[in-house]
Image (cartoon, rainbow, N blue to C red; front, side, top):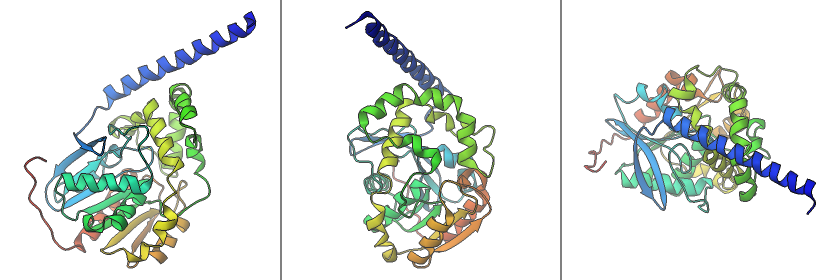
Length: 324
């Protein structure tokens, strides 16, 4: 090997090592800024981080792609905790929940994990709240585990197959695990730091992200190699189960409510809301001016929708398990 080629290899290795070190330092820093809020459960080889607050009829809350429980705790949970027992979950691989690299992460696999969480915590037919990709997981939970779900409250849910990812998520469309790992530990974190404001603006548009969302809402947790890796793994299989799920939307039992922003630039309400209205019997759809992050930007509207679905469910107030 010629000396110039050796020099290039050494330079690339030094740069890659420097980027990996930078990513590790940022990961340690953001985890100090936004530490875990709750407890942990072991479900099928996954360590699931969850927050259990409030009292009353149970609500299981499932966040979307690239998010974590802070999407709900920032503003929405405080509007519900006086009247409901809230179980707010970091999905497998998100926030502080873990999952093995070879674990299945499609929508139905994650729904099975949520069924395990509900069983472990003794939740009797809870109302399930799902935001964005969490909405697809909530739908899969109701389809595959109907005994686990008493009703659905969906906020800007992903309900229909689509040919390509929204532009803001295309950097996650990496199907090779090896390439995904390389990007996670080199480019993903530095680019995330440089583009943090731009990314937040795009996700929240046409509304504005709160100034304190990065810290109070846990948004900084996306600036970790493992967050990129798992979000990418989630995204590349996000739509795999939807074609067969569509065939069973008509069989959904129990009340279903949906809140959607007409200005959502990540998921088109004409596709994911209006089509679902035709497919899901009795779906109560409310459209509001706003974007994708309604649990943060419009928590009052989200809370009203959730309460309306809860009011349509049979009253079930189970005793809190001693181990919960």
